[in-house]
Amino acid sequence: MQTMNSQQLEISLTSRYRRGRRASRPCRVQRARWWFSQMRRVVDQAVDWTPSTTVRTEQTHLPLAAGQ
Image (cartoon, rainbow, N blue to C red; front, side, top):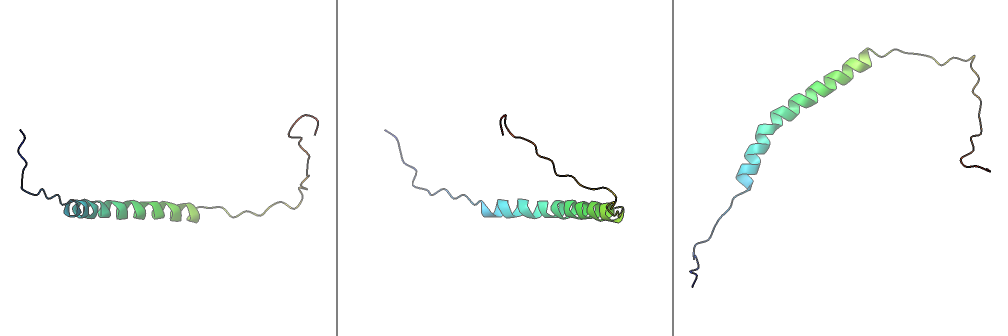
């Protein structure tokens, strides 16, 4: 015959979750700063260009299947 345990088991997930989340926040902020720094660098190094007006675009027809 099995005996039942009359005590209640308590599991607290919120304290562990919050602690881990707070620990990862500085890492997320650091990665975001790095990412935006890279994007600013790309924008600063971008070359302005103007499309050539001498090139005339030509529309072509490409059949998708035989017989069209």
